[in-house]
Image (cartoon, rainbow, N blue to C red; front, side, top):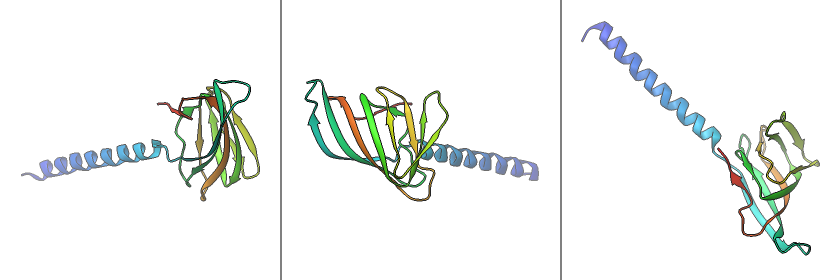
Length: 138
């Protein structure tokens, strides 16, 4: 094997390994890491179609909810940490502990924890019964 062939083979192997690493890193960054714990559910007295769902959402440092939407509205109060919310078509906004926000019916959004500590969010959803709380989107 000539020196030129050895260098070329080494370069191809290195490029392949770098491609795999970058690909795996990109996939790891896109995977949702949100944990939702349901505290209670209650029928909406004004509509048999909807229910209120209260829960705690937690996103670890560097984690994300992934791009998603809800079959209703989501009211959120940040208990600990801070979260960057990106609503489709709007610039990102940061919501900190002690602040509240809302996601509208079907509004596409992503919540990302850019901080160094986990974020904990008290959430209340008014959603259609029988549908999942969140629909992941590509």
